[in-house]
Image (cartoon, rainbow, N blue to C red):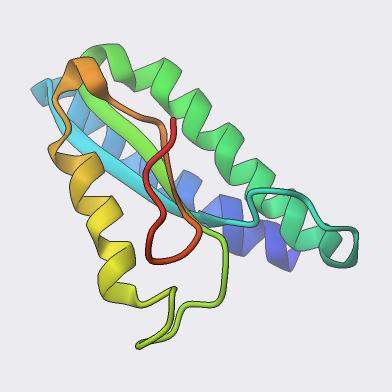
Length: 121
């Protein structure tokens, strides 16, 4: 339950307060950080939580996307640490790319699998 609360409930509470206001003004970006692009049996609760994040993003996109709210996640497939393939500055580029995408090109997910990774939808 703790992992679910951290992974999904926090994002859901933030979305419930922000997404309707963004939709009312006809624009906005709501980005969520995810991880574990593939479930792992040794991390059941974390895998379920990250799957919940993906589902939440899909549902929020269905609810608010047509109102001009870009809902997406940045999935980080490794441990975040400066000076590594998972450097926060490199990961931050995905957030900026999602935020600045033209509406007709909106992706719902960007995957950071290391320094040379790109976005995927």
